[in-house]
Image (cartoon, rainbow, N blue to C red; front, side):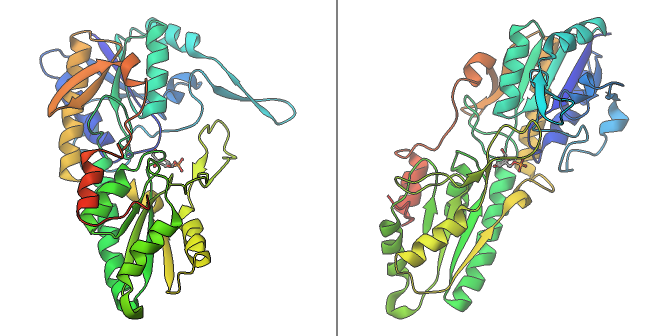
Amino acid sequence: MPKVLITTGGGDCPGLNAVIRAIVKRANQTAKWEVYGSMEAFNGVLRSPKEIIRLDDEKVAGIHHKGGTILQTTNKGGPFDWPVQQEDGTWTTEDRSDEMIEYLAREGYDAVISIGGDGSQKISYELYKKGLNMIGVPKTIDNDLACTDYTFGFQTAVDIATDAVDKLVTTAESHHRLMILEVMGRGAGWIALHSAIGGGAEVCLIPEIPYDINEVMERLNERYVGGRGFAIIVIAEGAKPKDGTVVARESDEVGYKNPRLGGVAYQLSDQLKAAGFKHDIREMVLGHLQRGGTPIAYDRVLATQFGVKAMEMAINKEYGRMVSFLDHEITSVSLETATDGQNLVDPEGFMVQTAKGVGISFGD
Ligand code: F6P
């Protein structure tokens, strides 16, 4: 019987379990494949003893609405950068990709479906180039993967962020306050842009459009006529002022490559005070609330579509490709193209025009 291995890598994301369930259900139909899952991305294959579990109908029953991933995940290390502690306590990394590929061949795996974001899909592409039959499924709340209009998890994050704006409006209005809501997204402003439009914010600051604090002040002053008023700013964690830098710190976690973003709301608050803003300001960093919990129906459906498509690609031996949602079609693109670039907000695009059309300032 043919065998497929599933991994979930990178940050968790609402909808991961719905993808896993869809793969298993589709596999159990005409093709009758055996499905396995490696715990914590590829760590389950690399650890000794192995942490690989059989995924059958019983294991995936009813998981489509559960957040997180039953396979667990990691955004550290991986087969090309396996962390190894030296005698003096320091860490180096080891490339264990050949050993892993040999193990999977020996065990008779026909394909590997890797559900993950840009980092995971780069690993998928490297493994594919070394001969592993890889299929990618795009995942991230940031919606920053190239070659797919949407990733699952994004709309759930937008819903959570928009709900936060709605809640902040009532308290801002009561106190004549400026509330600054910082949302996730790394280098992409999609969550900020969608929740600013959905929640009716006055200002939206995103990485793709560096802001001028004086322009932000101008929009806020319009809201505080006669000393009364209130306002909402949605700022993406990766936003930066013109001539400024992103607020980030190095991670002290072993094998964690990305800088950790967060705290730009406080920087903006200080800048506004320095620029003469006289009213109360409160800052709110929404953080991992955007990633936890139940996926909304849209993401469950998209994740299910992605899972079914990924399994059909395995059956049809369409390797070296990533599932994608393009122009309302579930299709696939080569991993090479999918990992070459990012999906960022176009400052001249229709979504920014829409926001500007309802009076949202980008501080530009
Ligand atoms: O990529 C998803 C994401 O949630 C980003 O929006 C955020 O910057 C990052 O992951 C946070 O990573 P961690 O969970 O490692 O803190």
